Length: 501
Image (cartoon, rainbow, N blue to C red; front, side, top):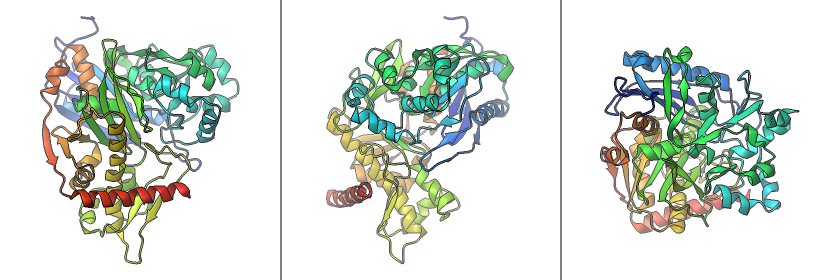
């Protein structure tokens, strides 16, 4: 065992969950139970319609603050930690100075659509097949590669500095590891690399062809490691003791791991700001004919496990919009009671930043259908929850068309919105399948913790971990097939109308 792994006496794991709207830190004990957590939101910047940015210094501060707060709440110090696991918002892009660590621009968030016109150029120039064949992705602003190009284009001389290794690119995991290790480690894991549109998921290395197409110097890219690996040592100057970073996975892959979806055919869906469904396809990198993404679910011992993924840009963010934008509710939990009172006549297509899978329309914007003078907050609340179920069915049908081996009987769910019983029941009704909500709600952080803890020798292997998974509540379909089909057909008409505007 590597001398940096200190499982003999240090049995706690610190999971850093750096999300789209907040940073969290959770301390897990030797039995993989969360014992303390801390969370802090940070500002969202919208400089132009369709643009979304984050201040990386603010994110860094929230990460450190939540880590310290979680340790205090757990009544331990960093000396009690066997390892750190990190999970992060994927695709969000940072370029920073290799000497000072300062970003050259605010982070461009995964939701950002500023590179839509360049993605259209990629399609027009015939690059779609190359992108799909090498990366498993589609030419869309969602992914990091076009964001990197935009940043280099905007900052004169930056491309030359990047080619000299003086500017570094990373997703949030890379940036945090670089900061935590005081610049000693410029690394990422295979799941985050697979979301950049620059990584060849079949050969397991950065693609020269993709870097040439995007005009991104390979010298600025991080080294790619397994999800459970030696990512570096978090320096004592940050947490109070040196702690090895041993686990990293993008948030949706971490949730897949936390849901113990280790067998081909298993599927999970996470409901946070967006909705992300992953279907484990095992050793097969299944090419999609239905605009799903082919990606890496996780990589252990140098062996990638692949997945089909469907990404919905707006899920829980619809509820946030009801609260903060439309100001129809004061708290997210109000939607459950309101939805029960709603008529069902209103339909929201939440294309606030375009539509993700399986439509991939970056230009359309949100629309509301079925309004009357009687429409009110209850109708909007119900429509907000219903559109999440409709969008998940979009993903499910596309995935099953691509890979019929999927387990169609059950969907494992997690994320903040999964706590809403009304939404989960409607989801089950739309899918015509059981929806299982796990007993442990911290699946994303747990996935990162398990990777680090397993590497440190504190936690069991994948088989042992899967045996510990437990269901807290199962939702069973209650609608008839005719009712389900009619509702879904109406949804499809609304989406079609939205994309025509």
